[in-house]
Image 1: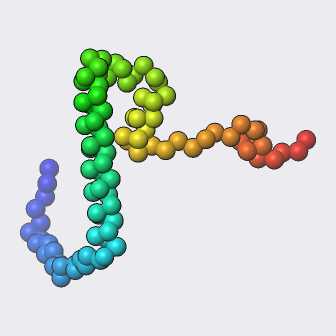
Image 2: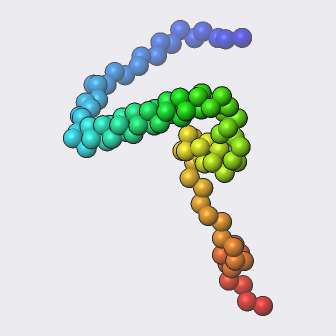
Length: 95
């Protein structure tokens, strides 16, 4: 149940924020766009090569490391190497 008390709320209006495009922003945009274009070309090349083999995605999944690397690249995941010694995992405890 909603009660109407007859109170009007007025929103305050502020001036629009001015955005300025800097040279660094343009350079960053261009580098990202070129990177995406090269990835798109590589993907198209892989599809053309995979399609000519007749195996397609099955041929790519035969090597699990390369498939995992491809997935990590696609989602932008960069795994960090795991430390092997116990001192890096638990600190340096002395008994």
